[in-house]
Image 1: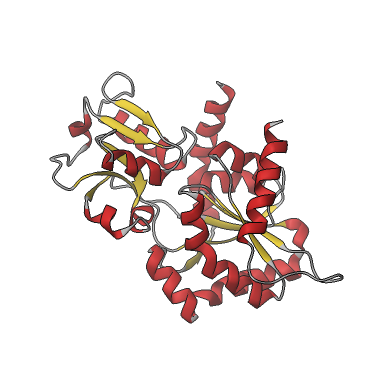
Image 2: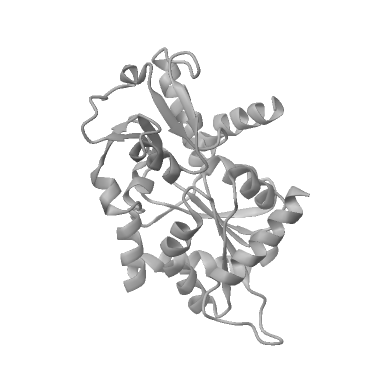
Length: 281
């Protein structure tokens, strides 16, 4: 039932957010490009519209934008092959590669988990969060797995030494700090820079000192190698275009890099941790 409702919602979203191209009879079917719901749907639509429109023009076919109502819903659709192009956290991406998704590229900027705190907060290191409220998105989020371990390595356990405040996205976690509902919000350096300037100015980032490969872009194998090759080249060319330069600057993604075997191996422990969490549900 959940998946049927999700599919209907995603179909509506895709129609709403599709690039300004339409497929006439006999034209190629639209490509479904999905972005992990790390921020609100409206934020993601506005953020990724330049990439969506560029790919539609470059590939000569409509590209529809999709996201999901939750992290679980995104993973469900990803693993069932529901997306043609997927922009995903690296641990989910590695899992998707087992389901016929081909790795393309990842954003050049490092994926850096940070705790956003009010600008005047004295917090500087993990021990400073003892007794605090920390807002985090879904427990399966890659940066949450990393941050909980970072705090645990400093002797802090969730529920005992700090209180978890559940929020649906990384943007909402930062919003909880602004609203006074949390003392810190877990996000990334890039996601923080994509928030409204006014909110950014009210926050300061406490770094975990950890860096990982950023969001992976993949294509489903059913597209075929010729189209996947065109897509990979289009992405490589995107940062040099006028719209690509603006996109990379606004998002702080910085460009693209290849997804290497070493980067995939780096994600394996987090894939295993995610699967342990899911099996324990």
